[in-house]
Length: 324
Image (cartoon, rainbow, N blue to C red; front, side, top):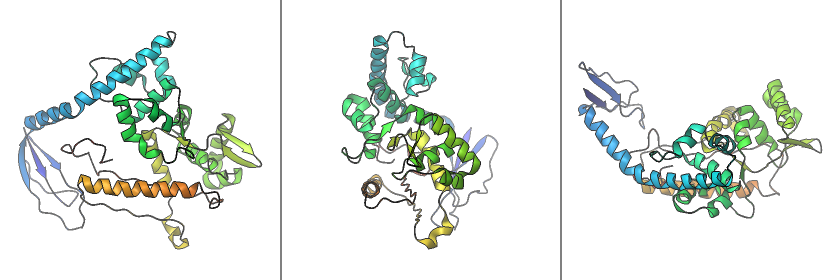
């Protein structure tokens, strides 16, 4: 069988196929609305599969095996100290799926755990929820992964005390509960009226659940989150970002309080690195402003900074953490 690769500026390209061929659109987004000339070239499917397998083994085999080995040793040592604790119980308490934990403890497991799963597991094993402290407590491949993926979330050791709570990760599976908790996490907190205005009767029900679970506390007629500075699983944060995007109101641009830009271009790694440095610097400055007591008020304001590669990560780029 052969596979035909087409490059086009249109979402659908008219390509005539022979029997036994597959068509894959390689470029669906361009900087203009003018379609790019369509070209097709036959590629052997078996060769593509072989190149893909060799690439995966080269990039991930050594790193994932050493990372998994260290995590396996840490987990085994913890279970040895707590003989009554089963692997399934450990998975439930750490917030890592039981299937993931079982695969991790198998020596033939080659695929690397997702960074958020590594953080959740290590956080539970070390009995430490503050990310800044966790990054100082581990070494080896685990430390390399966590520092590469999470050091950008640490701004100021003196003012930043963000913690991970597996219970919150579970509660925030519901986006309304997440948004209500986020309002309550502001220094000024929130109120029953504000929650009702924003989310209606359903919001009041979610609020009541959070109060019953002692995650939101009533203080001086205001509602405050029990944990003001919190961190959530990266995969969950991605899902929750959609809830924040939905709060953006383009009709309110005339009031001068909101902002929205969407930029994209083909970049090399050096360019991506420079963009990320600018974004990180901007995030740190925004973080400092939001923690400046003289600038804090009652307007529930949010900022969302995100950048990534459009589509799959290019396989021929080195895995240095630059692209994300």
